[in-house]
Image (cartoon, rainbow, N blue to C red; front, side, top):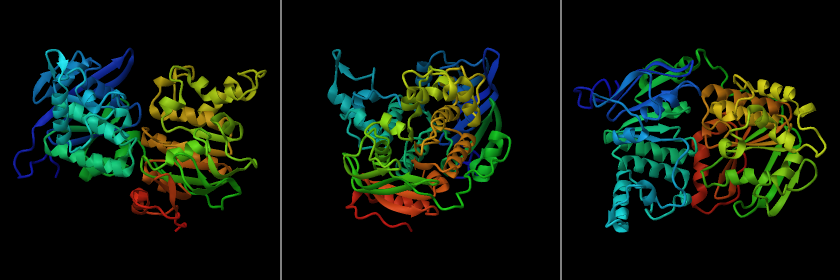
Length: 517
């Protein structure tokens, strides 16, 4: 029985903090929300699931006062409200923590939490009062972050805590968390879940948007599923399962979510690292062979992204031995790495992987054309529109036109555009970081198939991911990083508990990496 059916003492259910009734929203002739309803009680965690483009973000923008709906109404604590501006939604107690955090990096934690609302005395900011109020609000979320530290020096997990504290300082009674664990590892995610549970106990109504099904079932009381702008189902989390939710999301079963591993042994080494290191890495021994996917897990500061960047020449190795398949050593720059057959999928596609205002076609052809000789046509042969369009179709990019700016696409389609760019170059080694961050379950399955097909065709893949389940599900071998060192190499069937246990070694003296188990 869920929290909505009765209270803990068996009495009446908790009051509905939020109701969204028959919400309708269109942009021109395109209907993006069609008669959508949603409710959330005080102390409830209500998950919202759906493919990219299902209407989740639009619904939250209606709630947050960014968009005005053409139809329907919003009630907070039983009273109808109308928002003409996001500031009005904030004043009504609605806080939205976006996937892309919006803190001012070179301002302190205190200045970020109370930006524009700093306590003052005779027109001068009262620093002592600002610090005291910040400590009070951080204590409410169980955090000991220094109020005076710059936000740029915080981890992503700590920045999320600051965003939540900022929302609570505005007396948020309804809190929207949009893909909050996308940039977090499993340990940081567990800390966030403890904070969510504390907010639940304090009566905050929480709307939780995530593509990670396991965590949805771990923390949600109810699940609303959206598809093509319509509400398909509202399910008690305790009575549903992943297959049911996915079936409502996509209208069919998604079978073979992780494609089967290769049945043949891997081929020759593509890259060999021996005691390789730089300012962030130390003593890394690793061999990646043709035809295999090597997954890399670890905490946020473990060095897993530094390893990927070093192999791609963006943070070059400065010691140890590196041998690539072409007989040469470590690349000294990304351009050199690309020319030598190393591809790189960045962990932040919007920041490092896409020209958001450029077309899909131009984004997919970007690296191929950049590597062309000075006297080569940028739009002929492999760089032609026809060839690029064929690549985009091959990875199933869904768009009305490949001339559209890539910023108009869903996260899953954006990721496929970056993937198409590297498939065009046919690299021997493909370093992929967070390949499914912020994309829906169907797009994830498509990305997994692309990576497995690439490995089956003889390519080598180094996959870095914060999602331990993903690492286990897709990899042929699992490496665990901690404190800049490779602390374990595990078989593909290692348990999630084993991977996390090795990742936590960063707080003690590290010995030699364990052999594959």
